[in-house]
Image (cartoon, rainbow over all chains, first blue to last red):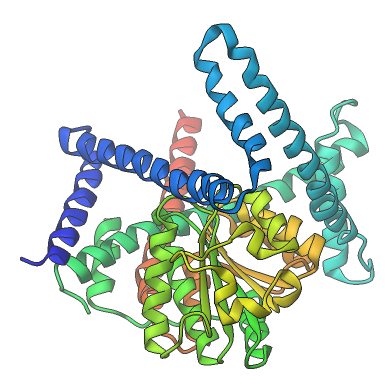
Length: 201
Length: 259
């Protein structure tokens, strides 16, 4: 028995163990689940150690003399002070840096890359059917989420139109979600029938 | 019943027709329009759990790019499993097309920190990836000597199963202007259509159907096309049960009304 076949068989048995949950919770399912969680955690730690700590911190500092990297190194180490209650406040320094940095990047990202292009693309030519549908859809949907006035009369009618647009959007999302879940089942079936059982080529 | 509807058509393919949607065609046309020697950044931003949808996209895209003699740089921002999948796909396809590492393609590997990585690559790729996935210094690779940042990249082909596609659009496309297209999982596709409306993406592949369309367009018949028979049959089955469920509901309600 080759190592490749052993690996494929192990993978197939783990797949079947996970699908056994369709019957009911059982030890095979739990074993597969725990193996997955353990391997994921171990792999992640190894990856971060190699690609961040070694490659981006230790090697540049020791081999190339980039001593300024000691600052992010210390900030990273301070995160672990959360485990020592007396000095746990030190971790806030690192968190403050992370929050500030993320906010700075995200505000520009959301405004420049999301909000403005999306708003701009709703300024459409109202002489085309597509343009009318888009503008009516956007306005009525936004009005549905306007809660400072009771949805009655004209406002209620427009909000109702908004609900229809939201429902169509949910329908599209549901259809795509069904396709995604079925695709995963097809993928596993292809693996079992092709790589493991060699029923199909 | 769903299991049978999936397994039988895989064993006995029906060859049901497969239509091509405009977003998939646009993405294919964009890659087709790239000249020989252009540089494309191909991302593998997905976890192994979505391989049936995303891996066929990567295979089809890479085969299409290599067939057109386009230089490819591969990268991932996903920690779990993506690196192994990327190495596997790149090595297999490079072998098929006899491509030379460092000259025709480079595998940058994985780096932690989505936004910082994407922004940093816009300044200088070497700052973020001093070494490639195989611990070669980037400056030692001929392809990377002429690709310093996004300005030297002609197109970004994102294959993703998570929010990284939003980062590529809102950080890289918005701030550096590099044209891009994406292949995403079906769950993400409805949201990503809005990026087509804003012209932030030239094209989009949605789920296994999108992957199958790209396989068909680029004449790379693979797993996605084979998966479309069961996909269609299961969908018919679900539609049938939805109609049946609704009929049952209305009949029951009518009977209760008569009482």
